[in-house]
Image (cartoon, rainbow, N blue to C red; front, side):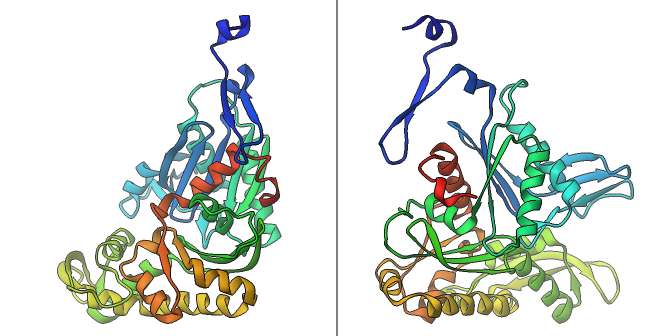
Length: 360
């Protein structure tokens, strides 16, 4: 053991993804907290180098009347739709992109602060995943927000590419893979081969739109007003894309729009399926369109390997079965689909040289 090792401890080492070289974590690396961020419409997840996923919290900020942050993430989520006139909540991302730059920067700063292990550490490298269909202006906005939050080097990666890497696909081989990532604000559909995206479609429809469908359904059919949190619970617990073997029910509370008083109602999975049907059809149609645009040789690969579903929307009951019925292709739901994107972004951060050609 050398003198420096005896003073600062043995250096940590790891092998790059291709196994070709070994890197050492030097003493100065301890001054940095390099992170990968899945900056999602509904949730933001952060992966720290050599630590794994260190944060998974809602993408929401609570502000006071002076526009100063009162709470960020889970604490702000608990305040959502329950605030008074001196506090209000803001979700700075809509449809997968930043809609409020100032609040987004506050949120990124606050979440980075939560995961920093040492007060003196700074963020040297940050990898952020973005929807594949966003404009160059929107990409610039994400990069600027990350830089203003303290990152020295910012790399952007498309969400479908990060999801593919996160579920263990070798994106560098000349074989086609289809990824469908259903997030809170967007549904990303992409065919990937040779470290590039052959075809991509970003549909600005995701979990938030499904929640809105449920809210509007109850307003229209039952004259019952429910909040976003209740709609989210309904979607997660009894939402489905095709009839269930045993239909289920859930008791919800809302406000009667006729007399204005609180009301309890039992809702069935059939009703929720009816509420979600239009948006589910849109997602399935987009997948069919992507298959039509895929080159024939890659189509044969997809026939063999199937379609991979990631993102929170992949957990909707029987969605894989619905897509399978429509496309006649195998459909697989990724293991832990909620974290697939951030796991892939984290792998890119850990092996940046190996994945250099998938970031911008």
